Length: 537
Image 1 (cartoon, helix red, strand yellow):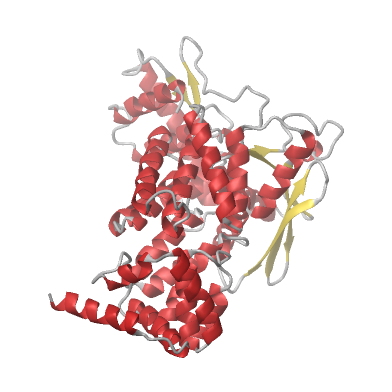
Image 2 (cartoon, helix red, strand yellow; image 1 turned 45 degrees about the vertical axis):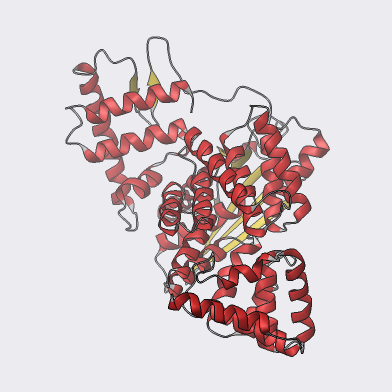
Protein backbone atom coordinates (compact mmCIF):
# COMPACT_ATOMS: atom_id res chain seq x y z
CA UNK A 1 0.00 0.00 0.00
CA UNK A 2 1.47 3.36 -0.92
CA UNK A 3 1.63 6.30 1.47
CA UNK A 4 -0.66 8.26 -0.83
CA UNK A 5 -3.22 5.45 -0.84
CA UNK A 6 -3.19 5.47 2.97
CA UNK A 7 -3.94 9.21 2.95
CA UNK A 8 -6.81 8.67 0.51
CA UNK A 9 -8.35 5.88 2.62
CA UNK A 10 -8.01 7.97 5.77
CA UNK A 11 -9.87 10.81 4.04
CA UNK A 12 -12.53 8.37 2.84
CA UNK A 13 -13.08 7.25 6.44
CA UNK A 14 -13.55 10.89 7.51
CA UNK A 15 -16.16 11.47 4.80
CA UNK A 16 -18.13 8.29 5.52
CA UNK A 17 -18.17 9.05 9.26
CA UNK A 18 -19.22 12.69 8.77
CA UNK A 19 -22.64 14.13 9.58
CA UNK A 20 -23.13 14.94 5.91
CA UNK A 21 -22.88 11.29 4.86
CA UNK A 22 -24.07 9.55 8.02
CA UNK A 23 -27.52 8.74 6.62
CA UNK A 24 -26.43 8.25 3.00
CA UNK A 25 -25.49 4.56 2.93
CA UNK A 26 -25.92 4.14 -0.82
CA UNK A 27 -23.80 7.16 -1.60
CA UNK A 28 -21.13 5.93 0.83
CA UNK A 29 -21.12 2.54 -0.91
CA UNK A 30 -20.75 4.21 -4.30
CA UNK A 31 -17.95 6.47 -3.05
CA UNK A 32 -16.09 3.59 -1.38
CA UNK A 33 -16.31 1.50 -4.55
CA UNK A 34 -15.09 4.37 -6.75
CA UNK A 35 -12.18 5.17 -4.44
CA UNK A 36 -11.00 1.56 -4.06
CA UNK A 37 -11.23 0.78 -7.77
CA UNK A 38 -9.29 3.95 -8.57
CA UNK A 39 -6.61 3.13 -5.99
CA UNK A 40 -6.27 -0.32 -7.51
CA UNK A 41 -5.59 1.20 -10.94
CA UNK A 42 -8.97 0.29 -12.42
CA UNK A 43 -10.42 3.80 -12.87
CA UNK A 44 -10.92 3.29 -16.61
CA UNK A 45 -13.05 0.21 -15.93
CA UNK A 46 -15.68 1.91 -13.78
CA UNK A 47 -18.76 2.07 -15.99
CA UNK A 48 -22.48 2.42 -15.25
CA UNK A 49 -23.11 -1.34 -15.80
CA UNK A 50 -20.19 -2.18 -13.50
CA UNK A 51 -21.44 0.10 -10.71
CA UNK A 52 -25.00 -1.20 -11.18
CA UNK A 53 -23.75 -4.77 -10.84
CA UNK A 54 -21.48 -4.18 -7.85
CA UNK A 55 -23.54 -1.71 -5.82
CA UNK A 56 -27.19 -1.65 -6.81
CA UNK A 57 -28.16 -5.02 -8.37
CA UNK A 58 -28.79 -7.01 -5.15
CA UNK A 59 -28.41 -10.19 -7.20
CA UNK A 60 -31.00 -9.14 -9.79
CA UNK A 61 -30.45 -8.64 -13.50
CA UNK A 62 -29.35 -5.14 -14.40
CA UNK A 63 -31.16 -3.15 -17.05
CA UNK A 64 -31.50 0.44 -18.26
CA UNK A 65 -33.37 1.41 -15.09
CA UNK A 66 -30.58 0.21 -12.79
CA UNK A 67 -27.98 2.03 -14.90
CA UNK A 68 -30.17 5.14 -14.76
CA UNK A 69 -30.14 4.77 -10.98
CA UNK A 70 -26.32 4.83 -11.09
CA UNK A 71 -26.34 8.14 -12.96
CA UNK A 72 -28.80 9.64 -10.47
CA UNK A 73 -26.78 8.43 -7.48
CA UNK A 74 -23.53 9.72 -8.98
CA UNK A 75 -25.10 13.15 -9.47
CA UNK A 76 -26.29 13.15 -5.84
CA UNK A 77 -22.85 12.03 -4.66
CA UNK A 78 -21.17 14.93 -6.43
CA UNK A 79 -23.58 17.37 -4.80
CA UNK A 80 -23.09 15.74 -1.39
CA UNK A 81 -19.31 15.91 -1.67
CA UNK A 82 -19.51 19.56 -2.64
CA UNK A 83 -21.70 20.24 0.39
CA UNK A 84 -19.31 18.33 2.66
CA UNK A 85 -16.25 20.30 1.55
CA UNK A 86 -18.11 23.58 1.87
CA UNK A 87 -18.91 22.71 5.47
CA UNK A 88 -17.35 20.25 7.93
CA UNK A 89 -14.65 19.10 5.49
CA UNK A 90 -13.39 22.56 4.53
CA UNK A 91 -10.08 22.05 6.40
CA UNK A 92 -9.50 18.44 5.41
CA UNK A 93 -6.01 17.73 4.02
CA UNK A 94 -7.36 15.94 0.94
CA UNK A 95 -10.26 16.43 -1.44
CA UNK A 96 -12.02 13.42 -3.00
CA UNK A 97 -14.33 14.06 -5.93
CA UNK A 98 -16.07 12.26 -8.80
CA UNK A 99 -15.54 14.33 -11.98
CA UNK A 100 -18.38 14.65 -14.48
CA UNK A 101 -18.44 12.15 -17.34
CA UNK A 102 -17.40 9.09 -15.35
CA UNK A 103 -17.54 7.25 -12.06
CA UNK A 104 -13.86 7.18 -11.08
CA UNK A 105 -12.61 9.05 -8.03
CA UNK A 106 -10.17 11.95 -8.13
CA UNK A 107 -7.86 13.08 -5.31
CA UNK A 108 -6.34 16.51 -4.79
CA UNK A 109 -4.64 18.46 -2.03
CA UNK A 110 -2.56 21.65 -1.97
CA UNK A 111 0.49 19.59 -2.97
CA UNK A 112 -1.52 18.03 -5.81
CA UNK A 113 -1.50 14.48 -4.49
CA UNK A 114 -2.08 11.73 -7.02
CA UNK A 115 -2.30 7.98 -6.66
CA UNK A 116 1.06 6.42 -7.44
CA UNK A 117 1.40 5.04 -10.96
CA UNK A 118 4.15 2.84 -12.34
CA UNK A 119 6.82 4.94 -14.01
CA UNK A 120 9.35 2.26 -14.90
CA UNK A 121 9.60 0.62 -18.31
CA UNK A 122 10.05 -2.75 -16.60
CA UNK A 123 7.16 -5.15 -17.22
CA UNK A 124 5.70 -5.72 -13.75
CA UNK A 125 2.44 -7.51 -14.55
CA UNK A 126 0.36 -9.11 -17.27
CA UNK A 127 -1.21 -6.37 -19.36
CA UNK A 128 -4.41 -7.28 -21.19
CA UNK A 129 -5.72 -4.87 -23.80
CA UNK A 130 -9.47 -5.13 -24.34
CA UNK A 131 -10.62 -4.03 -27.78
CA UNK A 132 -14.24 -3.07 -28.41
CA UNK A 133 -16.31 -6.21 -29.00
CA UNK A 134 -17.85 -6.17 -32.47
CA UNK A 135 -21.50 -6.57 -33.44
CA UNK A 136 -22.88 -6.30 -36.96
CA UNK A 137 -26.04 -4.41 -36.23
CA UNK A 138 -27.37 -1.13 -34.90
CA UNK A 139 -29.86 -2.23 -32.25
CA UNK A 140 -29.19 0.10 -29.26
CA UNK A 141 -30.23 -2.63 -26.82
CA UNK A 142 -27.71 -5.07 -28.28
CA UNK A 143 -24.97 -2.43 -28.26
CA UNK A 144 -25.66 -1.80 -24.59
CA UNK A 145 -25.62 -5.54 -23.90
CA UNK A 146 -22.20 -5.90 -25.57
CA UNK A 147 -20.83 -2.97 -23.57
CA UNK A 148 -22.10 -4.64 -20.39
CA UNK A 149 -20.40 -7.95 -21.25
CA UNK A 150 -17.16 -6.12 -21.95
CA UNK A 151 -17.46 -4.25 -18.66
CA UNK A 152 -18.01 -7.51 -16.78
CA UNK A 153 -14.93 -9.05 -18.41
CA UNK A 154 -12.76 -6.03 -17.61
CA UNK A 155 -13.92 -5.90 -14.00
CA UNK A 156 -13.51 -9.65 -13.48
CA UNK A 157 -10.03 -9.65 -15.01
CA UNK A 158 -8.85 -6.69 -12.98
CA UNK A 159 -9.52 -8.53 -9.72
CA UNK A 160 -6.63 -10.92 -10.35
CA UNK A 161 -3.18 -10.14 -9.02
CA UNK A 162 -0.50 -9.44 -11.63
CA UNK A 163 -3.13 -8.38 -14.19
CA UNK A 164 -3.58 -4.86 -15.55
CA UNK A 165 -6.47 -4.16 -17.93
CA UNK A 166 -6.15 -1.48 -20.62
CA UNK A 167 -9.06 -0.32 -22.76
CA UNK A 168 -8.13 -0.01 -26.43
CA UNK A 169 -9.72 1.84 -29.32
CA UNK A 170 -10.27 -0.20 -32.47
CA UNK A 171 -7.77 1.98 -34.35
CA UNK A 172 -4.96 0.99 -32.00
CA UNK A 173 -5.04 -2.69 -32.93
CA UNK A 174 -2.06 -3.91 -34.94
CA UNK A 175 -1.41 -0.41 -36.22
CA UNK A 176 1.96 0.95 -37.25
CA UNK A 177 2.31 2.38 -33.77
CA UNK A 178 1.21 -0.79 -32.00
CA UNK A 179 4.59 -0.98 -30.30
CA UNK A 180 3.61 1.99 -28.15
CA UNK A 181 3.80 1.25 -24.39
CA UNK A 182 0.02 1.47 -23.94
CA UNK A 183 -0.68 -1.41 -26.34
CA UNK A 184 0.09 -4.65 -24.46
CA UNK A 185 1.29 -7.96 -25.83
CA UNK A 186 -2.08 -9.69 -25.24
CA UNK A 187 -5.23 -8.22 -26.76
CA UNK A 188 -8.73 -9.51 -26.07
CA UNK A 189 -11.12 -9.22 -28.99
CA UNK A 190 -14.75 -10.32 -29.09
CA UNK A 191 -17.59 -10.83 -31.52
CA UNK A 192 -21.28 -10.97 -30.64
CA UNK A 193 -23.95 -12.59 -32.81
CA UNK A 194 -27.68 -12.57 -32.07
CA UNK A 195 -29.70 -15.63 -33.03
CA UNK A 196 -33.40 -16.38 -32.79
CA UNK A 197 -32.86 -18.77 -29.92
CA UNK A 198 -30.30 -16.67 -28.07
CA UNK A 199 -26.81 -15.32 -28.73
CA UNK A 200 -23.22 -16.41 -29.34
CA UNK A 201 -20.16 -14.69 -27.89
CA UNK A 202 -16.75 -15.52 -29.36
CA UNK A 203 -13.63 -14.15 -27.68
CA UNK A 204 -10.00 -14.46 -28.82
CA UNK A 205 -6.86 -13.60 -26.89
CA UNK A 206 -4.49 -12.41 -29.60
CA UNK A 207 -0.72 -11.94 -29.55
CA UNK A 208 0.35 -8.48 -30.71
CA UNK A 209 3.73 -9.85 -31.80
CA UNK A 210 2.61 -12.94 -33.74
CA UNK A 211 -0.97 -11.81 -34.44
CA UNK A 212 -1.88 -15.41 -33.65
CA UNK A 213 -4.61 -16.57 -31.30
CA UNK A 214 -3.27 -17.59 -27.90
CA UNK A 215 -6.61 -18.69 -26.45
CA UNK A 216 -10.22 -18.78 -27.66
CA UNK A 217 -13.58 -18.90 -25.95
CA UNK A 218 -17.06 -19.45 -27.31
CA UNK A 219 -20.29 -19.26 -25.34
CA UNK A 220 -23.87 -19.76 -26.51
CA UNK A 221 -26.76 -18.30 -24.57
CA UNK A 222 -30.05 -20.13 -24.86
CA UNK A 223 -32.95 -17.94 -23.85
CA UNK A 224 -34.81 -20.86 -22.34
CA UNK A 225 -31.99 -21.93 -20.00
CA UNK A 226 -30.87 -18.82 -18.15
CA UNK A 227 -31.37 -15.13 -17.87
CA UNK A 228 -29.32 -12.93 -20.15
CA UNK A 229 -27.49 -11.34 -17.23
CA UNK A 230 -26.68 -14.72 -15.68
CA UNK A 231 -25.16 -15.80 -18.98
CA UNK A 232 -23.14 -12.57 -19.27
CA UNK A 233 -21.74 -12.97 -15.75
CA UNK A 234 -20.84 -16.64 -16.24
CA UNK A 235 -19.15 -15.92 -19.59
CA UNK A 236 -17.16 -13.05 -18.07
CA UNK A 237 -16.07 -15.30 -15.19
CA UNK A 238 -14.90 -18.03 -17.55
CA UNK A 239 -12.91 -15.53 -19.62
CA UNK A 240 -11.37 -13.89 -16.55
CA UNK A 241 -10.43 -17.15 -14.83
CA UNK A 242 -8.74 -18.62 -17.90
CA UNK A 243 -6.68 -15.48 -18.47
CA UNK A 244 -6.36 -13.95 -15.02
CA UNK A 245 -5.35 -17.13 -13.23
CA UNK A 246 -2.50 -17.37 -15.76
CA UNK A 247 -3.36 -20.70 -17.35
CA UNK A 248 -0.52 -22.72 -18.82
CA UNK A 249 -1.22 -21.35 -22.31
CA UNK A 250 -1.00 -17.70 -21.25
CA UNK A 251 2.06 -18.23 -19.06
CA UNK A 252 3.91 -20.19 -21.74
CA UNK A 253 3.21 -17.58 -24.43
CA UNK A 254 4.32 -14.61 -22.35
CA UNK A 255 7.45 -16.32 -21.07
CA UNK A 256 8.42 -17.23 -24.64
CA UNK A 257 7.80 -13.68 -25.94
CA UNK A 258 9.74 -12.08 -23.09
CA UNK A 259 12.65 -14.44 -23.70
CA UNK A 260 12.67 -13.73 -27.46
CA UNK A 261 12.60 -9.98 -26.95
CA UNK A 262 15.02 -10.07 -24.02
CA UNK A 263 12.42 -7.92 -22.26
CA UNK A 264 13.06 -6.22 -18.94
CA UNK A 265 10.58 -8.07 -16.72
CA UNK A 266 10.16 -7.87 -12.97
CA UNK A 267 11.56 -11.13 -11.50
CA UNK A 268 8.45 -11.70 -9.38
CA UNK A 269 6.27 -11.45 -12.48
CA UNK A 270 8.39 -14.06 -14.28
CA UNK A 271 8.34 -16.39 -11.28
CA UNK A 272 4.57 -15.94 -10.93
CA UNK A 273 4.10 -17.04 -14.54
CA UNK A 274 6.42 -20.00 -14.01
CA UNK A 275 4.43 -20.90 -10.91
CA UNK A 276 1.21 -20.79 -12.95
CA UNK A 277 2.75 -23.14 -15.50
CA UNK A 278 4.02 -25.42 -12.72
CA UNK A 279 0.58 -25.63 -11.12
CA UNK A 280 -0.85 -27.21 -14.27
CA UNK A 281 1.85 -29.90 -14.47
CA UNK A 282 3.76 -29.99 -11.18
CA UNK A 283 7.04 -31.79 -10.65
CA UNK A 284 9.16 -32.17 -7.54
CA UNK A 285 12.16 -30.61 -9.27
CA UNK A 286 10.26 -27.51 -10.41
CA UNK A 287 8.72 -27.13 -6.96
CA UNK A 288 12.19 -27.01 -5.40
CA UNK A 289 13.49 -24.55 -8.00
CA UNK A 290 10.58 -22.15 -7.57
CA UNK A 291 10.63 -22.37 -3.79
CA UNK A 292 14.33 -21.49 -3.67
CA UNK A 293 13.87 -18.67 -6.22
CA UNK A 294 11.04 -17.02 -4.25
CA UNK A 295 13.00 -17.43 -1.00
CA UNK A 296 16.00 -15.69 -2.55
CA UNK A 297 13.91 -12.76 -3.81
CA UNK A 298 12.32 -12.26 -0.42
CA UNK A 299 15.68 -12.52 1.36
CA UNK A 300 16.95 -9.73 -0.92
CA UNK A 301 14.19 -7.52 0.46
CA UNK A 302 12.62 -6.43 -2.84
CA UNK A 303 9.57 -8.70 -3.00
CA UNK A 304 6.07 -7.64 -3.95
CA UNK A 305 3.27 -8.96 -1.67
CA UNK A 306 2.26 -11.57 -4.26
CA UNK A 307 5.73 -13.15 -3.89
CA UNK A 308 5.03 -13.85 -0.23
CA UNK A 309 1.74 -15.66 -0.88
CA UNK A 310 3.31 -17.55 -3.82
CA UNK A 311 6.04 -18.82 -1.50
CA UNK A 312 3.42 -19.68 1.13
CA UNK A 313 1.56 -21.70 -1.50
CA UNK A 314 4.75 -23.67 -2.25
CA UNK A 315 5.26 -24.30 1.46
CA UNK A 316 1.71 -25.65 1.67
CA UNK A 317 2.48 -28.02 -1.20
CA UNK A 318 5.72 -29.02 0.52
CA UNK A 319 3.67 -29.99 3.57
CA UNK A 320 0.78 -31.57 1.68
CA UNK A 321 2.89 -33.79 -0.57
CA UNK A 322 6.02 -34.24 1.59
CA UNK A 323 8.33 -32.73 -1.02
CA UNK A 324 11.25 -31.73 1.16
CA UNK A 325 13.04 -34.63 2.88
CA UNK A 326 15.37 -32.16 4.62
CA UNK A 327 12.65 -30.80 6.88
CA UNK A 328 9.59 -32.01 8.75
CA UNK A 329 6.07 -31.24 7.65
CA UNK A 330 5.20 -29.16 10.69
CA UNK A 331 7.92 -26.62 9.98
CA UNK A 332 6.78 -26.27 6.35
CA UNK A 333 3.29 -25.38 7.51
CA UNK A 334 4.62 -22.92 10.09
CA UNK A 335 6.63 -21.19 7.37
CA UNK A 336 3.54 -21.09 5.17
CA UNK A 337 1.50 -19.39 7.90
CA UNK A 338 4.19 -16.82 8.68
CA UNK A 339 4.73 -16.01 5.01
CA UNK A 340 1.08 -15.62 4.01
CA UNK A 341 0.44 -13.40 7.03
CA UNK A 342 3.12 -11.05 5.74
CA UNK A 343 1.40 -11.03 2.33
CA UNK A 344 -1.99 -10.16 3.84
CA UNK A 345 -0.46 -7.49 6.05
CA UNK A 346 1.12 -5.81 3.03
CA UNK A 347 -1.88 -6.04 0.70
CA UNK A 348 -5.11 -7.30 2.32
CA UNK A 349 -7.26 -6.63 -0.76
CA UNK A 350 -5.82 -9.46 -2.87
CA UNK A 351 -7.95 -12.61 -2.99
CA UNK A 352 -4.88 -14.72 -3.78
CA UNK A 353 -3.47 -14.12 -0.29
CA UNK A 354 -6.66 -15.19 1.46
CA UNK A 355 -6.98 -18.28 -0.75
CA UNK A 356 -3.51 -19.43 0.35
CA UNK A 357 -4.36 -18.69 3.99
CA UNK A 358 -7.42 -20.91 3.63
CA UNK A 359 -5.16 -23.72 2.37
CA UNK A 360 -2.87 -23.29 5.39
CA UNK A 361 -5.77 -23.47 7.82
CA UNK A 362 -7.16 -26.49 5.98
CA UNK A 363 -3.85 -28.34 6.37
CA UNK A 364 -3.82 -27.37 10.06
CA UNK A 365 -7.33 -28.91 10.33
CA UNK A 366 -8.71 -25.58 11.53
CA UNK A 367 -11.64 -26.03 9.20
CA UNK A 368 -13.81 -23.15 10.36
CA UNK A 369 -10.92 -20.73 9.85
CA UNK A 370 -10.23 -22.32 6.48
CA UNK A 371 -13.85 -21.68 5.50
CA UNK A 372 -13.69 -18.08 6.73
CA UNK A 373 -10.48 -17.32 4.80
CA UNK A 374 -11.87 -18.94 1.63
CA UNK A 375 -15.03 -16.83 1.87
CA UNK A 376 -12.93 -13.68 2.35
CA UNK A 377 -11.02 -14.58 -0.80
CA UNK A 378 -14.28 -14.98 -2.71
CA UNK A 379 -15.54 -11.64 -1.40
CA UNK A 380 -12.50 -10.00 -2.97
CA UNK A 381 -12.68 -12.05 -6.16
CA UNK A 382 -15.75 -14.26 -6.73
CA UNK A 383 -13.82 -16.01 -9.53
CA UNK A 384 -10.92 -17.25 -7.38
CA UNK A 385 -11.12 -20.98 -8.10
CA UNK A 386 -8.47 -21.90 -5.50
CA UNK A 387 -10.76 -20.51 -2.80
CA UNK A 388 -13.71 -22.37 -4.32
CA UNK A 389 -11.81 -25.66 -4.15
CA UNK A 390 -10.69 -25.17 -0.55
CA UNK A 391 -14.23 -24.26 0.44
CA UNK A 392 -15.55 -27.28 -1.46
CA UNK A 393 -13.11 -29.55 0.42
CA UNK A 394 -14.22 -28.03 3.71
CA UNK A 395 -17.88 -28.68 2.90
CA UNK A 396 -17.25 -32.20 1.58
CA UNK A 397 -15.00 -33.22 4.47
CA UNK A 398 -17.51 -31.82 6.95
CA UNK A 399 -20.21 -34.12 5.61
CA UNK A 400 -21.92 -31.68 3.22
CA UNK A 401 -20.74 -33.83 0.34
CA UNK A 402 -23.27 -32.70 -2.29
CA UNK A 403 -22.64 -29.00 -1.65
CA UNK A 404 -18.89 -29.50 -1.64
CA UNK A 405 -18.86 -31.47 -4.87
CA UNK A 406 -21.13 -28.91 -6.55
CA UNK A 407 -18.64 -26.15 -5.72
CA UNK A 408 -15.82 -28.27 -7.14
CA UNK A 409 -17.79 -28.66 -10.36
CA UNK A 410 -18.29 -24.88 -10.51
CA UNK A 411 -14.55 -24.27 -10.21
CA UNK A 412 -13.79 -26.88 -12.87
CA UNK A 413 -16.41 -25.43 -15.20
CA UNK A 414 -14.77 -22.00 -15.04
CA UNK A 415 -11.22 -23.10 -15.79
CA UNK A 416 -10.25 -25.06 -18.89
CA UNK A 417 -6.77 -25.94 -17.63
CA UNK A 418 -7.07 -26.19 -13.83
CA UNK A 419 -4.41 -27.51 -11.47
CA UNK A 420 -4.91 -31.27 -11.41
CA UNK A 421 -5.30 -31.32 -7.61
CA UNK A 422 -8.71 -29.76 -8.15
CA UNK A 423 -9.81 -33.31 -9.04
CA UNK A 424 -9.23 -34.70 -5.55
CA UNK A 425 -12.79 -33.94 -4.43
CA UNK A 426 -14.19 -35.93 -7.36
CA UNK A 427 -11.96 -38.91 -6.57
CA UNK A 428 -12.80 -38.77 -2.87
CA UNK A 429 -16.53 -38.69 -3.56
CA UNK A 430 -16.36 -41.65 -5.94
CA UNK A 431 -14.39 -43.69 -3.37
CA UNK A 432 -16.90 -42.78 -0.67
CA UNK A 433 -19.73 -44.02 -2.91
CA UNK A 434 -17.91 -47.16 -4.03
CA UNK A 435 -17.60 -46.25 -7.72
CA UNK A 436 -13.99 -47.38 -8.01
CA UNK A 437 -13.86 -47.65 -11.81
CA UNK A 438 -14.85 -44.01 -12.18
CA UNK A 439 -12.50 -43.09 -9.31
CA UNK A 440 -9.65 -44.77 -11.17
CA UNK A 441 -10.45 -42.69 -14.27
CA UNK A 442 -10.55 -39.41 -12.33
CA UNK A 443 -7.45 -40.21 -10.29
CA UNK A 444 -5.47 -40.70 -13.50
CA UNK A 445 -6.14 -37.03 -14.35
CA UNK A 446 -4.16 -35.88 -11.29
CA UNK A 447 -0.71 -35.43 -12.75
CA UNK A 448 1.18 -36.07 -9.54
CA UNK A 449 1.52 -39.83 -9.91
CA UNK A 450 4.38 -40.34 -7.45
CA UNK A 451 3.12 -37.94 -4.81
CA UNK A 452 1.94 -39.29 -1.49
CA UNK A 453 -1.81 -38.83 -1.49
CA UNK A 454 -2.18 -39.87 -5.13
CA UNK A 455 -0.42 -43.14 -4.25
CA UNK A 456 -2.74 -43.69 -1.29
CA UNK A 457 -5.79 -43.20 -3.51
CA UNK A 458 -4.30 -45.34 -6.27
CA UNK A 459 -3.52 -48.22 -3.88
CA UNK A 460 -7.04 -48.00 -2.45
CA UNK A 461 -8.71 -48.00 -5.86
CA UNK A 462 -6.57 -50.81 -7.32
CA UNK A 463 -7.19 -52.95 -4.24
CA UNK A 464 -10.96 -52.55 -4.55
CA UNK A 465 -10.80 -53.31 -8.28
CA UNK A 466 -8.75 -56.45 -7.67
CA UNK A 467 -5.84 -55.34 -9.87
CA UNK A 468 -2.91 -56.84 -8.02
CA UNK A 469 0.02 -55.61 -10.18
CA UNK A 470 -1.24 -52.02 -10.15
CA UNK A 471 -1.86 -52.20 -6.39
CA UNK A 472 1.62 -53.60 -5.75
CA UNK A 473 3.22 -50.81 -7.81
CA UNK A 474 1.38 -48.07 -5.90
CA UNK A 475 1.85 -49.63 -2.48
CA UNK A 476 5.57 -50.28 -2.93
CA UNK A 477 6.10 -46.63 -3.91
CA UNK A 478 4.03 -45.56 -0.93
CA UNK A 479 6.10 -47.63 1.49
CA UNK A 480 9.30 -46.21 0.01
CA UNK A 481 8.23 -42.56 0.25
CA UNK A 482 5.98 -42.48 3.33
CA UNK A 483 6.79 -44.99 6.05
CA UNK A 484 4.78 -42.90 8.48
CA UNK A 485 1.53 -43.77 6.68
CA UNK A 486 0.92 -46.92 8.75
CA UNK A 487 1.40 -44.98 11.98
CA UNK A 488 -1.01 -42.34 10.78
CA UNK A 489 -3.70 -44.92 10.11
CA UNK A 490 -3.10 -46.48 13.51
CA UNK A 491 -4.22 -43.30 15.24
CA UNK A 492 -7.79 -43.14 16.47
CA UNK A 493 -8.35 -40.03 14.41
CA UNK A 494 -6.04 -39.65 11.42
CA UNK A 495 -4.72 -36.21 10.53
CA UNK A 496 -7.55 -35.73 8.05
CA UNK A 497 -11.21 -35.13 8.75
CA UNK A 498 -13.42 -37.05 6.32
CA UNK A 499 -17.08 -38.06 6.07
CA UNK A 500 -18.04 -41.27 7.83
CA UNK A 501 -17.04 -44.31 5.82
CA UNK A 502 -14.29 -42.71 3.74
CA UNK A 503 -11.29 -43.82 5.84
CA UNK A 504 -12.89 -47.27 6.17
CA UNK A 505 -13.05 -47.54 2.38
CA UNK A 506 -9.37 -46.55 2.18
CA UNK A 507 -8.44 -49.26 4.70
CA UNK A 508 -10.61 -51.85 2.98
CA UNK A 509 -9.08 -51.17 -0.43
CA UNK A 510 -5.54 -51.53 0.90
CA UNK A 511 -6.44 -54.71 2.77
CA UNK A 512 -7.94 -56.24 -0.39
CA UNK A 513 -4.80 -55.33 -2.28
CA UNK A 514 -2.65 -57.03 0.37
CA UNK A 515 -4.78 -60.14 0.15
CA UNK A 516 -4.46 -60.18 -3.64
CA UNK A 517 -0.69 -60.07 -3.30
CA UNK A 518 -0.83 -63.18 -1.09
CA UNK A 519 0.92 -61.22 1.58
CA UNK A 520 -0.05 -61.20 5.25
CA UNK A 521 -2.57 -58.47 5.95
CA UNK A 522 -1.59 -58.30 9.61
CA UNK A 523 -0.56 -54.68 9.17
CA UNK A 524 -4.06 -53.60 8.25
CA UNK A 525 -5.63 -55.92 10.83
CA UNK A 526 -3.38 -54.37 13.44
CA UNK A 527 -4.52 -50.92 12.33
CA UNK A 528 -8.18 -51.84 12.61
CA UNK A 529 -7.69 -53.34 16.08
CA UNK A 530 -5.72 -50.34 17.25
CA UNK A 531 -8.42 -47.93 16.04
CA UNK A 532 -11.14 -50.02 17.69
CA UNK A 533 -9.30 -50.08 21.03
CA UNK A 534 -8.69 -46.34 20.86
CA UNK A 535 -12.39 -45.70 20.33
CA UNK A 536 -13.27 -47.87 23.35
CA UNK A 537 -10.93 -45.80 25.49
